[in-house]
Length: 143
Image (spheres, rainbow, N blue to C red):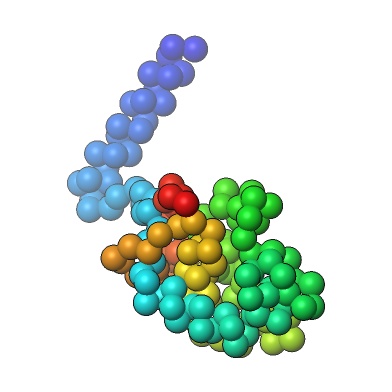
């Protein structure tokens, strides 16, 4: 067992040195950040495109859309990288015309949803790029 751990450690060291020498690095997850401006834009678009199904309070829609805040929502979406939520909403919403909005607009809607779930805006924008979104992880919620 010790030899296996020792060999794994040596392997990781060799890969790290090789990446350092070639200028490559292992992609480290970056902490998600979004701005207050993204949240405000997301709220405006939410009121145009999402409110009928999900409601004014994100959990009381006229047409029975699932809640977008609360413990059940957090348990479903906040265990995966934020890009999973953005990509899902982009691919599936609104139900009558999925993906009709630019990716950046879906990012802003997600910023609004995150704010409603206790995440605070920061100084860096959430990227509107699928690869960059995939590298993000959620920060600790403060609410």
